Image (cartoon, rainbow, N blue to C red; front, top):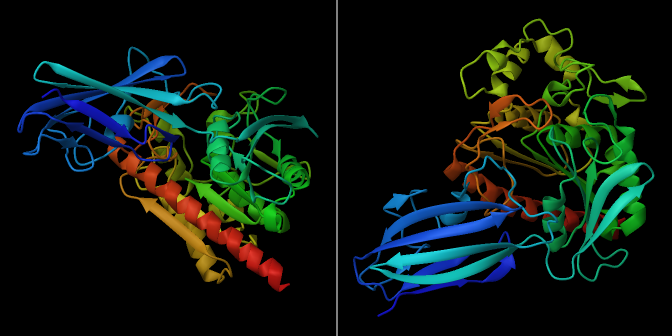
Length: 437
């Protein structure tokens, strides 16, 4: 019989797993499957070979490959193991992000071919996109379908040291029911090209604008950020506690850092990042007796920025001066980290935050998901996880984000499920508290 290939669902949001299944192969036959996706104009590809079962079926929820670009049972392994063809691209999504990703899949068995495709969307039907260029703010607001004032909780999304506007995460948050405001603070139109000397009041303006614009359900506004954005959301929660309903900190820092790789070269990587009231916040590299960049600059390839950060953490007085006062946060906190983070020690930092919140008996839920052997790039499900070594988008310095494709893919999947559950519970708790008051 001619083999058949089915993929279900054929069209859904990016965070929905797909069932990839080949039927009508000869029992024991080798089935080669290739998956190709064009991502922002660049072709990405993966391939794996499987052995058909006695039922003549290869089912990726049941069958691990015998060879290929990934190993072990992984129903979406053909997606996360993709690599760009003849390119070093790290762009996972189309521009604009409202343009869906289409993956073409070909199964070959004993000279016969079967083809199918599936579509991954960041924006659900009815989600709307709005550019924001007012009150000095630069960002993009995504609203859920049928959004009306007061009908949805809100989240503000902040990028890390690459800067720019995190539209993919905002679109997915909106698709899952949140008014999602991706706010840029550098490397975006009209803003500085660098992270140095960024005023925290800018984000307070963003929080207030978002509340005024969408009138969120239960007055709930969470903040979500990764890397330098993870440091930032903890800092904002501690600095403006009345304006932040919950904090989601991906691979965060527990201390204030200097400009590092995203600095203005005129100021230098040991210069300040954040200003409050026009004054720089103390950072961990400042007057630090043990800090040195040598383990990063001069260390073996691939360079690990984390090794330099660890030298700074050996000065307890500098750490104490730069520590983010997370005990001042007035809401639930979620921490997401990984044990092989090549950019900085997010697992250690998350433990520092959790320990401080436990010490002060933080009266709100605190959740920490720490991924063994994962790296710095925790995103969301079913995107490629193969591009670990890269040139920093500001400094150009080459480094590794750490981890490995399989464990990074697990972190992508489990973290997003955890974040959705955490935020849903936080919204419900805020609603209950509002009703009781």
